[in-house]
Image 1 (cartoon, rainbow, N blue to C red):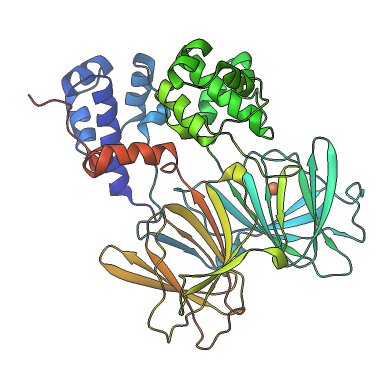
Image 2 (image 1 turned 90 degrees about the vertical axis):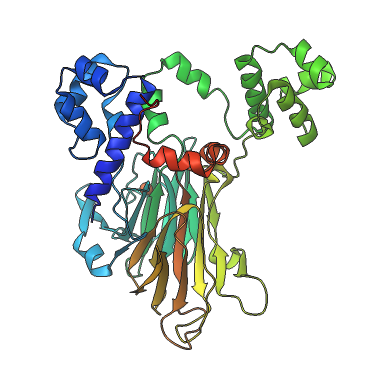
Length: 459
Ligand SMILES: [Fe+2]
């Protein structure tokens, strides 16, 4: 379900924002675009959709792009989308490699709002060894999206990094986080039944606007962006400090004088011999008038492009703390390289006969897949009332950011291991720097940004 009227209203606000930024009122916009004034007025009043002809003329005339005109569709107006196992099964398609059936893919819950593309995959290729160079293993070329993979059954996971191939023997409950563009593959181990994986791919900060900006920069510029590998913490710290100093044309002498840090110490940072402590970063940030976090080093905890977490080694805790927790959490494979994402196995400790389960209210997009035998009930707040859905093994759901929700096991007396949810959380466009900006804008500014249809001045 798509909210058409909401889309029209957001299109109107998007168009008004563009006209305000370009300092055009209705009359001057209509005149320059060569369209009837009533069309511009109607678009801004959300009475008519924007026309392709108007967009074509605007792009030819103004410094705007076609994509600037379009908001996104809201396909989860209640806050949650549910995909039943039967609907997933209906999306089944077999992907062949070298003429043989290799994978069966099925879609699970997805939304137009979130860059999460989760697939249920049955592994049809079977091997009887752990050799990453086995001729039966067909590798892909790698892909741009990050991949979190959860394993069900005995599955070999193959991954390639820096030209070296690896094979990891995975079993139920094991999980792996993988960096973009690393070639990988999967096989089941004979004589087992075909194994399953939940391959949850998701986009990071380069997806979308950043990707399109990269597309129009020169090769030389792209080389400068990537001159520092994340695997070198000291060097990544230096690169960030150097970039901030360069952007403000701040010579070393001035930095030493204003920060009070010895020049020799600053030189050791720049040469990557030493890493500044938090106090030193703070002093440099003050000189540059940036946030200290802009100078912090990047940390990549992947090894050979992956982080593998075995089921038996996963960190686990109850939430909330105290005598009557509502959930048991197990942390699955995630990485500091993509700290906007996290993955968990969540077991609801309360059943539907209990009167309480703690609410979860977080600012991340969530994909949830029922892996356990015991169904769960998800409850969520939609405006003033609470909705609920029974979700069973093989069902999956998407939950919007800040939709308050809770889970209970659907069968009274269901043990902790019977009801199990696989949860992937991915921060959207409103996390990180955008969250800082939103905090500065405040609630009235954010409300205006969402819906403002007014001209930037009154006549
Ligand atoms: Fe993949």
